[in-house]
Length: 269
Image (cartoon, rainbow, N blue to C red; front, top):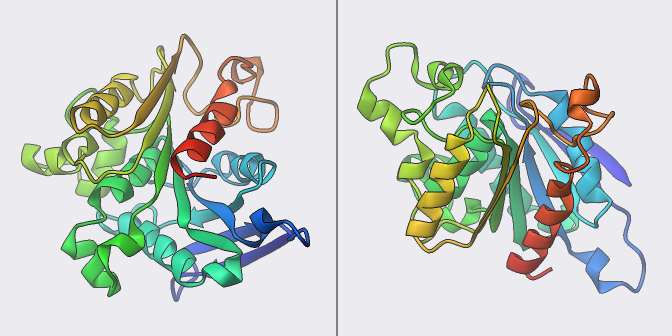
């Protein structure tokens, strides 16, 4: 396996850490692997290491090449979204170097990173995004999205901290509505896999519900798993990412295999 860091900003605060599996000679699958762009959570204040490399390792074990993005934090919208879109663009433009299939690029995000992944999946057609990057909108569209206990809405049971970072503490209702991803889903949104816990007291499960409902309304393939209990920030649900036994939840850990099967189905892997 090769691990490399690619800096995407002059001050090196935004960077992509690439985890690329070695090719197995004679196996066509290894020549162009599916890829997953990982966007950790952290309330848009930091990028959680618990939701970075440990998640990448899970997808690597299943044949994906994984790319963890350390995006702009404590920065207003659209800075993080431009980072994510630029990362997706570079992965496609340099697909041979990264050993990936440019038509099999998924995005994964947790908590605020889930909001960012959902924004990329729904706002890739915004001229302010793709024109800034000098590309076609399709160049930055993910082929599927995996959202782990995501922040979605700025108006329905919102995680206020995330939206205060993006829009400031005195954001207007129309500004909050515009960054509420359930309002941005269209028939061109890629397939979406969502999971959360019913008693999440940080990012309420209502966020996942309104996103799933928006996908259903737009006839977007969507799979939603709501587990009965578990704290926010479960990540891989085991000792490698949890502080104590409350995070070691075998039933919630099913999300990993379920999400892989979802990607295999909708990205034709």
